[in-house]
Picture (cartoon, rainbow, N blue to C red):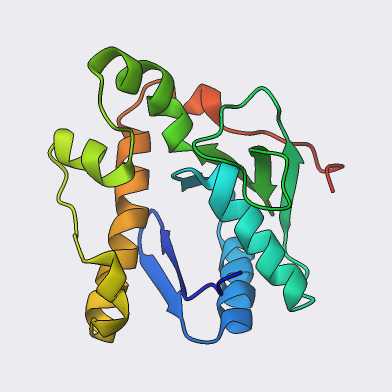
Length: 179
C-alpha cells in the first residue's frame, strides 16, 4: 500500500499542507484537528477511501488518531472498497463531524445532469478554479506546485460542500462511544 505523501486541511481562516515523513504528516494532521474548534471535516470520497486509508497508515506507524469510523452499508461507495474494508464509513475526528461531499452530489446532481461527480469535473462545471496536473508526473513538480495541487483539492471539496443547502443534514454525527 502506498504511503501518505501529503494532507491538506482547508480551514475557515487558514489552510495547511502537510508533507514529508508519513508518520509526521499523520501525527500533525491529528494534532491540528484536535486543536481546531469543533466543526466539520469535508472530504471527497473520504468515507470510502481517504479516511480508511489514513487509519490504515496510522496503524502501520502505531499512531493513535482521534479518527473514529463505523461502516455504513447503506452508503454508496464510489469504487470498489479499499482493500481490507467492507465499504464506506460514517466518521468523526476528535470533535469534528465528517461530511463526504461526494455523497451530496452523486445521487442527485450526477444522476439528473449526467455529470461525472469527480471533484475536478464537478468543480469545473460550477466555475471553480481547478489546479490540474499530470498525475503520473506529480513527483516532477516543485514542492510549491505539489502543495498548491493538494491544497486545491481540499479547497474545492470545502467550496462544493458549502454550495449545498442539504450539507448540514448530511454530516456524520457519531457518538463519543464509537471506537
